[in-house]
Amino acid sequence: MAVKGAHITPNIEIKPSLFEVLAADSLNSTFYPAIKRIVDVTTAKPTVFGGLVRYYDEFYLVFNSLVQGYYLKQYGGSLAEVFYGLTRQSLRNKTFATKDRNLSFAVLVLVPYAVRKLEKACASWKEDYENAKHVSAHRKLIFRLLPYVQACYESVKLIHYVSYLANVTKNHSPSLRILGLGLSYLSEEEESWSFKDILQGKVRVGTMMSAVLLRWLELSAFFLQFIEWWQTEANVGDLSKLPIPEAPEPDSNAKKYANVCPICLQKHIIPTAVSVSGYVYCYRCIATYLQTESRCPVTKYPATINDLIGIFTGDDV
Image (tube, rainbow, N blue to C red):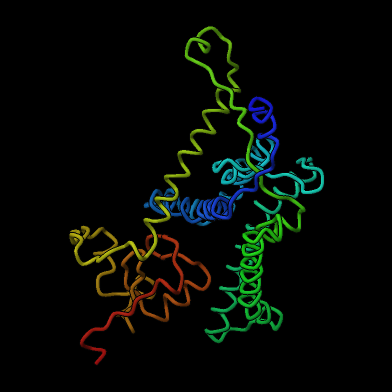
C-alpha cells in the first residue's frame, strides 16, 4: 500500500500558498526600481552614460522582454515565479499553450511599460497645470482620474488575495483571472552534469549557457532585493553621521562664470543653483532654458525645474 501511495501522492494538486505567490509578485515588482538604482549608481558620469538614464524605460523594456520571454517559453512562468518554484497553467485544461504564453508576455512586459509611461506623462501634465501652463481638458481629466483608478485596482487585488486565501478562487491576481491562468508548483526536471561530462563533450554549449544564465538570474534576484532594501528611505539612517566629503576642485568654467550667470553673463538676479551640477544662474534664465533643453547649460547634465535650488544672500534681505 505504501508503494502505491507513493505513486498517487505526486498527482494530488497542491495549490501554492498565498505567501509564495505574494513573494513572487513582490520580487517581480522589485526588478524595475532595483535595476534603476544600479543604473543610477553606474551612470555617475552623465556625459558618458546619460542616454541610459534618459531612456531607462526602453532599456528595461528590452531587458525584461528577453528575460520574461525566455522563462515563459522554457518554464511556463515569469522569472520571479520560477524563482519560487511556480509555473503558470490554464485552469481549463491544465496546459500552457502558445496563446497563454503570448498573453502572459503582454501582461508581464508591455502593460507595465505602458502604465509607467502613462504615470510619467500624468506627472508632467500635473506639473504643467500647477505651473499655470496650458493643459488640455482631456489630459487634466486623465491625471485626475489616474489615482482613483490605481486605488480601485489595488482594492481588487486585495479582494483577490482574500478570496485566494479562503479557497474561493484559484487566481490570486486580477491579471491571472483575466487570462484564465493559475499558479502551480514547477516540476523538478533539472538537467545536471559534471565537469567530466563537459570535457567529454556530452553537454551542449547551448544547454550549459542556458543553465548558467538561469543560475545567474536567480542569484541576481537576491542581490536586487538587497538593492531595493538599500534604496528605501526607512533604511537610509542618519545622514549626519556620515563623513562629510571634501568640496570638489573648481574647474575652468567655475572660474569663468564666477559671480555671473553663465547664460546672460550678468550679475545674478535671484541666484539659483542647479543641484546636479552646482552652477548658479539667474532664476529667469535657467527656468526658461530648462523648459526647452532639460539639461544644465554648462555641464549638459540632465536637469529639470525640480533640480533648482534658491540661494539666499545678504542682498536678498
